[in-house]
Length: 315
Image (tube, helix red, strand yellow):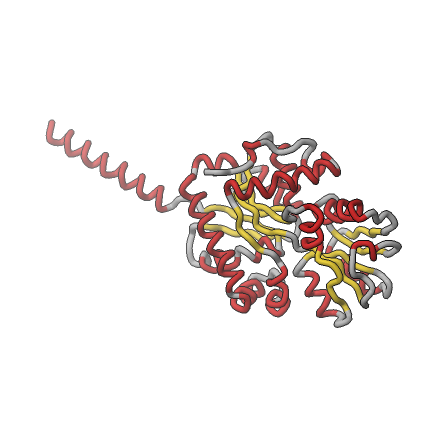
């Protein structure tokens, strides 16, 4: 009888160990969401490498309106978002998300059909068609125009990049403010369109800081419960960004394959997309002054208050 009890106990232990290993093997994939554009473009090598595996599950969205509620409700673990929306989400979730890295620097350009714009002062008296109201494009342009003393610029805001581009193409005298890769899309539609001003360069000259467009955030619970998976994702993401920046043609093919933008457009746009990977202390040093600028312009642009130190994920 004692022998039977021992055998049963041993069998039970073996079963428990087996179940534990099975649970580990069947661990749910890390759910990652990104906007179609530069933030997703930096992920494409990782997305391609993950096609056959179960480590990651990727979702691409055309609008941040889809991503914000998804991560707030816990439907995804990680999301690539516009920089100001990350701060708003941090406030609205009472600190339930953290920023893990900067993924995109400045990608905003002023476009013209002609040769008239050489400096911010040349925007005086002009109409600019733009998208991105209540986000980095609006706040950056407003800040730069104020610093340049330019007050008589008419900005006509459109809901989508494609709508702003269409209006720009119809107005012979109009200008446009668009991000990459839509700048390249515009140039494929009209060979007279040229980049007049790189707002990232203008920003650096005026502020001495770096313009930031996109960041990656993660649910705090995910980061705390899965530190190894989080660390591996960041390592894999950094490697994907390095590949995309070093292999333009191959990366463009992947971008086209994932239907982010057409491969020929991606190949031309990639050198201007400022895709990056900045984490830890360097991330915080880059983000704090940028958030301060947003806050100074409109406190609600970052949720009504500056993100505190707990916002920054620094394992």
